[in-house]
Length: 189
Image (cartoon, rainbow, N blue to C red; front, side, top):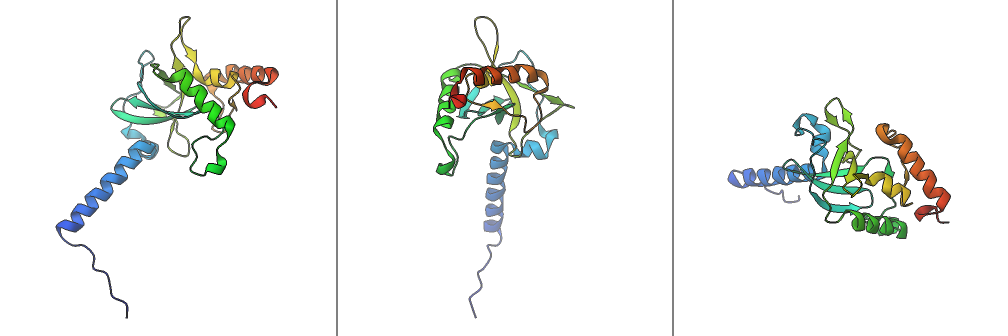
């Protein structure tokens, strides 16, 4: 008969439970899932004039921002670049690396403004818990929509998997057509 393992009891069990829940809570907050499951926990939205500190550029279509006191992953709405940091290296591609490099070149060190589509006061998220949003970057002639810039540069097609980009549908469509006609980025072949 195999020996049975003893379960931790008393203070050791309590300590393990607290550490496990703390780690789970931290992962849920970092991934964005806690806000997808419990939208009531979201802090008030960023106002239109408020810049969000850009903390990290994950790849061509995902950034992390400081949102109130939280670290929030934002997937660019209407954009889908090739993979560059996937855990399965066979899924990463040169086009993904180029899109990621373009994002770094354009966004590194730049204060950005994030715009979310309002869904009854809640932020729309993708299936991975990332907030879907538009990234605006300042410029001498006013703000530029980075989602549109990325598509116009040819590093993404206009993606409607999560629905059309309601406010900017025509702009993103025109950017994709322009990139295709000029054979830029992924349309070079």
